[in-house]
Length: 354
Image (cartoon, helix red, strand yellow):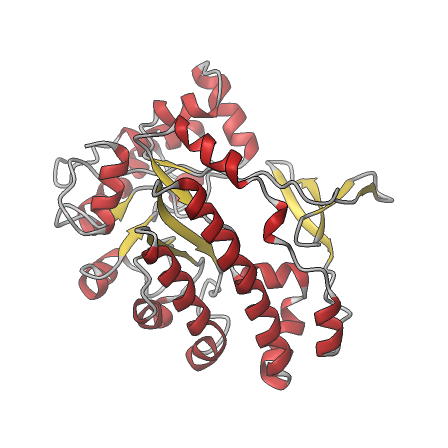
């Protein structure tokens, strides 16, 4: 099977020759791996680990984005959403810090309406489509932060939750306005790709380490309709929809399935997302992605611990030969030893092979 065929079969719960694999890492880890293996570029690294997915970006071509140096000497840059952030070294890796959320001061609907929302015209879709020629046999995944995740970069989470409880009109406007942009933006990507996009992956972190950030009825009120609109767009272009949400999100899984979501990531080591429970309850309806713990076994375990954990997740979540994509629970961070990354991908990806 090609990578594209393998990933699509896994989403469709059809037989695969081996479990497909994905890879994400912070920049410092990527650099270390390239040096460790003597590889020339990131594509060579992905091929070294036999990674099936690729995540092409579309170039921004809109108005020049502001940038300045702050009082601490950090370069502060604006995103095309309007958020200002800086990159800070933690001792292990660089960590993005938001220093200005442009909607924090807004108090009325009129003030939200005055904000310059991103324009779908500000991107090079033709160049994006041409770039896909690099990966004719790989599974193409597109998507970025979704309506909730991106909103927390424009307006503080505290303000958003106050809006949702006391001024729902404001919250609905922000989320709906974001999804209006995303629907147009993603549709242009699909059109430019000409059927080559396999997965639309939208990032919205709805959970903490213990529970959801909001109640299920509130999720349904503010996010169900827009999630359904995004899944319908993906399906209209023959793609699968992968919902990213860190945290303990088990309680919202029935809602996601009801909205047409095809896969859930990450499988994180939190209550309710135990692989055995997930496979038993939702294995026929959802693909699961990730699971090898970036908070425990990967940074602190031995090579054998990582191998054992990887084998367990493959044999559990792909017990019937499909429905799982192997990866860490989140991107590999700077505290993960390189030998543990190597151990994860060295395990046989055929379920039940020991």
